[in-house]
Length: 208
Image (cartoon, rainbow, N blue to C red; front, side, top):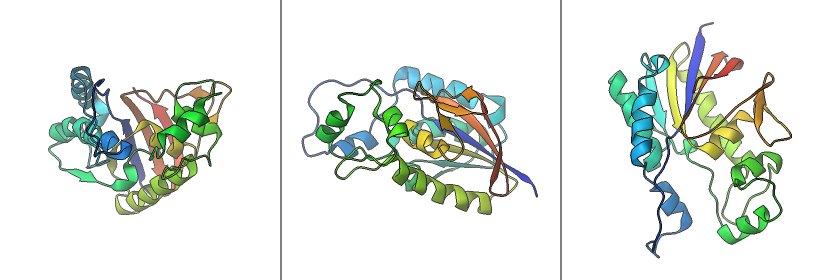
């Protein structure tokens, strides 16, 4: 049985925005349209120059703007199209007032970190860590079957990647993911290499 490698990429940094939003757009649509900053574009280009990402067989990405903007550099280096899958989207935040209430007494300022500990919490119209993990697994199971023995770049989002990694990682006292005793840093951007034999994960390492 051949090894299948998945390079799991969190998109690069996004731009900070202040001012009036389009009041016809809800938080979900605004989230989907976030763009990369100038630094984020430079990060994405540099990431695509990583030797591990220069012999990719196929590229999959979330349909969110910032994910596609990160994936385009990897696609360019490998002369490949970008395939989109909604299962790779960021977890839906839902009602932001409810999310604020949830975060009131939490030790971190990052809801996705806290949802590692409270895996079934979700707001109205939002998704829990478990909801997100399950849909990410739908994607995983399909591509492991379809692309056995291939190298696959997968561009997604911080929350979704963290919840997906709960399949194999533990959460430590600092509310960080740990694999084989090593703490993972799911920052923007980051690159993780997951090696599978069939559907079994046999290796997970952080490259960037």
